[in-house]
Image (cartoon, rainbow, N blue to C red; front, top):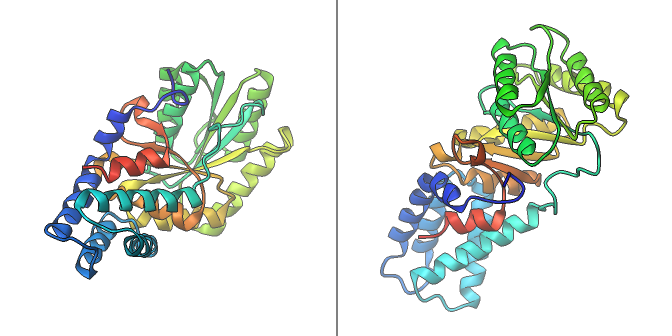
Length: 312
């Protein structure tokens, strides 16, 4: 069973444990002995969400929803407030994170995925894990090492290609990234591959250069397949909290990001950043990373995520 056919609930629970504990303990302290939702309760919930890096705007939206709900329904105990919090947060996510019936549209073959993100967010590892899980589901996968500015990126992706048993297209360090991307797409077509995952450089030192480079990569791929890339997947490090917002802002301005993967949620109490990013950018989160294992890169399910986050 691979990435697209199951979700490991135990892995999700374990991966979100730090965030969950932080939120739950703060909310519990604020509502002990209370029989109604008053300003003190709302302040406690607000503090818990902001501390988990949900973001101020998203937190205020959730608080407003809770206020309206509490005015309509009779709040009695902690468990009922948890239910209200969970349901209203789910509703907010559902409005902004349109989950596709399928993670990828494999009717387009080869399906070309350009992966972007700054260095250190787990971009290359995410590509490797995706490749391994796709291969396990019977897909023919090719990787493209178009991050030619960092030798470690090419080496790391090569190791992942060997581990996953998939092919890789690469050139010497310093080569033109667009040329590598072009060769990768051409190889995917020639070898009847199902999916091509293309790594790109993660530099943010100059947004104009970044935009130009990503635009050039897109243009050369479209010479092989007119509508390529079919997906631009932005990888963000969830443990960086508000910094992840800044990265998302920079990359959404530099290129047309169509999906998000948020990694390293297991090592942080800031997992609420997922809620804030979905609410602000209105870009679907397709994957979350909740551990080191290959299967700890999971398809994001908003209802399960919120249910885990706000459960006791």
